[in-house]
Length: 287
Ligand SMILES: NC(=O)c1ccc[n+]([C@@H]2O[C@H](COP(=O)([O-])OP(=O)(O)OC[C@H]3O[C@@H](n4cnc5c(N)ncnc54)[C@H](OP(=O)(O)O)[C@@H]3O)[C@@H](O)[C@H]2O)c1
Image (cartoon, rainbow, N blue to C red; front, top):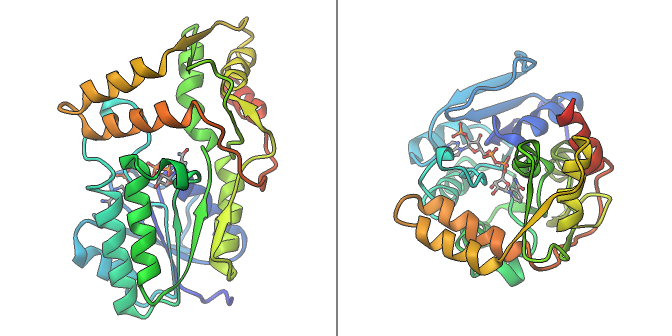
């Protein structure tokens, strides 16, 4: 791949997107960044062409894909369970916005499309959060585009809210906390995403180096703060009921809470690709 390859990063100002931009610049690529409401970090320089717009608008998708060789998308509604992170859910953002990008990429003659979905889709595909991502994957498969799908379990950044609760003195776990997973640092995942942009793989399962129980994750957050473990168990049925009750007020929160209720009580372990550990990440947040 030459330095002149034109790469669109959709979702560029998000948790993963900004790491992908940094990794692209590190490997001497330029990029076009689609940003929506959030701004890019201050280290972004003039090798990045910034386009602001809403990919739910097909004309925006066409404009940003124009003359691109590769489209990378980690665009989606927030995975935060907080009410302030938006009301529109994954089937009204992730699916239609990424469909617009795929259609625009087809029209623009884009060579390769890389999309970030979710690991565990076989078992969790019935949940709306996962289903919206898999609708995008199916549309990508139907397209004539050469493509890759990156499938991580949780990103470290998604555990920052566990850390914030630990700061307030308690760390919640859904169920008994025995289910295991291997989350990955967003920066490590960005390396795999750029490998996917540059390479020819079709599917990349990408987890972190440590397999941890959900209880251990909560304990690590408390330990980083120098607190004795005070993990609180919440029955999965209570979390599911909470999610259902949220639906009229905030469909996105209802969908992500339903996902967290399901994913927290089953093992989700994928091949280890990252190096950074979650305890290091929590210690960094504590500093
Ligand atoms: N976090 C995890 O643990 C995890 C695990 C597996 C998979 N994933 C998936 O990986 C992807 C990236 O996750 P992330 O945590 O980096 O998400 P994020 O921080 O919420 O970033 C998503 C980006 O998409 C942008 N966006 C949303 N709607 C848009 C629209 N209509 N037009 C243009 N841009 C739009 C957002 O911009 P604004 O904020 O400015 O609106 C944001 O910059 C998501 O699809 C997520 O579901 C995440």
